[in-house]
Amino acid sequence: MKTALLLIDIQTDYFESGAMPLVGANEAAANARMILNRFREEQLPVIFIKHIAARSNASFFLPDTPGGEISDIIKPMSHEKIVVKHFPNSFRDTDLLSHLQSAGITRLVVCGMMTHMCIDATVRAAKDLSFDVILVGDACATRDLQVNSLVVESANVHNSFLAALSYFYADLRSTRELLEGAL
Image 1 (cartoon, rainbow, N blue to C red):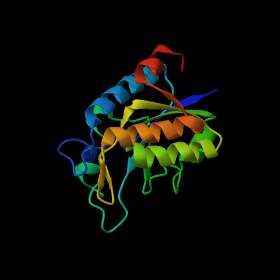
Image 2 (cartoon, rainbow, N blue to C red):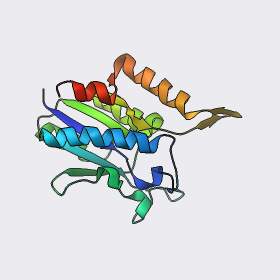
Image 3 (cartoon, rainbow, N blue to C red):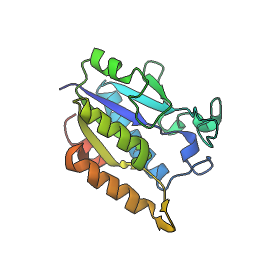
Image 4 (cartoon, helix red, strand yellow):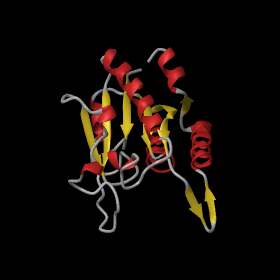
């Protein structure tokens, strides 16, 4: 089984000084960096997903802004693939699927941001497209959400989505579990 790493939306706007800071972004990115280093050491494929807003009323990931850039914590190397997307699902209207198929990739290790949005949409799509998915929960981050007048804390949002995805869509692991095993 050929494995690739998908680093989804680990972009500057999601960090403390950005337009949409997430809870735990630094910790998640540090874990993603450790996973990235392992993939690079083993010369395994790495794919960076970069969201650029296409909606006229968007408030973050605006085109040609520093906030839309991939974080320096996981900066891509010149030979590594970058997929630009405009929707939460990384496969929608991108060349991601054809790239993975042409490289013979059948398993994806996924980490990034936001757990409840782009991670969720991409993991579900990947499984529907017959990929085996390993989701690294502590290498993902999200934010508080609100439904009606109820604030749902980020930890509850994060854990609820991880629990839902681990039921059928993904094999949920921690960074430590992933790094201690074979890729």
